[in-house]
Length: 309
Image 1 (spheres, one colour):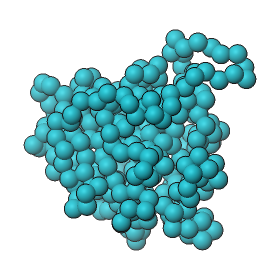
Image 2 (image 1 turned 90 degrees about the vertical axis):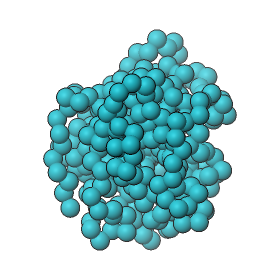
Image 3 (image 1 turned 135 degrees about the horizontal axis):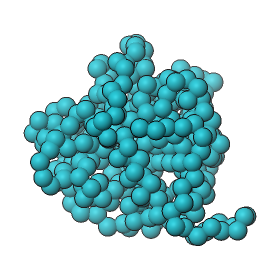
């Protein structure tokens, strides 16, 4: 498995546009209209109606590698649901990879925010232990893939083994991951707040964490992957060339810091794409995303060291 701190721009057959121009990119509406098939199983990992996931299983014998999918939508129920990544789950199923597409409590839903939203993601991932035997899942080959706000949660899932035992977000014995893939999601939560809240048209960051960075600094530290380095989990960040939610320099900064801290980290920039293409299996970005997923699920990959408390 090869990782590098340098940004890698992959040619995908897309047209190169003159400097200063922007190609037509996928809109949120078009993204959410992508067709999807029903899941094989819809299962609850908790008692709340939003604590559920959709399991899609490849045909043939297992044990199957698993990609946990975490949708975005500004951490808000009004903007997105797990339906957003259902097309990706279908595409992975066709490629021989199981997916566990999770829902979680979002901003202003009862029990959401700090710590509920993060605990939901952690419990949903760990619930794979209860599903593994029945559905022939390979718990030694589990990754988390998140888009936008879900990319932030994916990065956090890779960092949670670094939490203090006293943390409100700590779940004992978190399931070990082969890696995380962040599709254009916030990494360091103290950065880019004004831009994120402007684009989300809501105080989503400060509401999610229950205050500003100066008011609750420890909360921001415990959900910011950069602040938790080294994660001891491989990280692949995939950005569109025309990303406008999370500026590319912030991703570059994290990858550089992660590499300096000893982590395996890589940033890929896909030409002529925006914020939503990386989460669409119908886009020119999909071969890049699929290759990244396969690279992390490679059964020959080295085992990581035990988590550090």
